Image 1: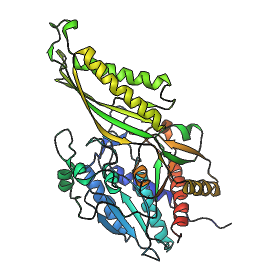
Image 2 (image 1 turned 90 degrees about the horizontal axis):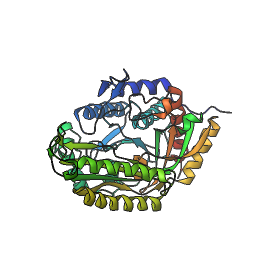
Image 3 (image 1 turned 30 degrees about the vertical axis):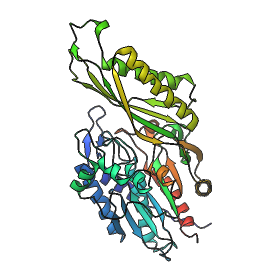
Image 4 (image 1 turned 60 degrees about the horizontal axis):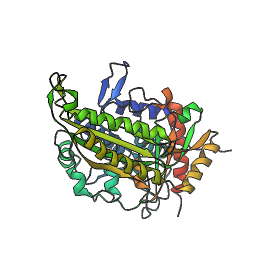
Length: 420
């Protein structure tokens, strides 16, 4: 049997390490080097220029659109055909590891490098993309670049998003030199493929090589402003307080109780990830709290039920605690199902390479879920060590794990890129 074309695992690992040095920091608690390339910061700009240089070194033509998404194109034998696209993101949360998103981008470039080495040209052109602010950590909404590219989020609305310092997406794109001039709405590619770390414990706990991702669960983000009354912590009786932090705490505990209740399904997730008190001093009752709510559910109907119940609880808490609560939706996506045919191709490619695998729903959001509204899309997951921990400097997938996922993606890409 002919051996399939395969990438060079060490070259991919070296590429991941190189990018991981940009925006790196020393995590005091673990002694490990983490990554902080928050979207549209100077570190993100440096990382973007690094990856663009790698794209151009492979002979690819690079385009930057008006939301800062970057697309590198390799010509096909019939360049008039719609391309097959691969990609992900290179921005990070402030406490990241080296693999989240980056494996998808650098793995795709390693596939291009492998095709160049083999002097193999696909029938369809190929595009490697990285999208702006997938994480949502800075400007408050996730999948920003891919949501604009697929038409879910208008460009003007995306430009107006602000970070906590009041800086807008548009001004920060301009500052780092990635406010492009290409049309932001994508012409649908023939298909979209993404390789990603699982960011969870399932594959590693079962000692499996590959996750065939069936889709992405529903995600709903709220930002709440809770306004009470600041007062002296030592002189104000408990029964006369309007404590914004108590209101926030009650909502946080209700989220935990909802997730544990089973009423919204066994897989519901609920998190209050940000809690910012004002004035934030030891001897002053917080007069204001800004908090976030993150709901996730693989069932759209159960998600809508959970959303309605927690929103009603906001009103209940406001009345009982004597505070004002206002909230806004910062992100909202229904469940997304990936293309069954491509999932079958991923399964077959993994089997051909002797890799163990399972079907798995993604608990995290990805650019692929946005692309699934535009074209056939699918994802390959690879396991992670340390129970698949992610958004943490301990995030780690071995060179073999990474290569397995990218090689499966390569096999599927070669099949789809020859389609008429």
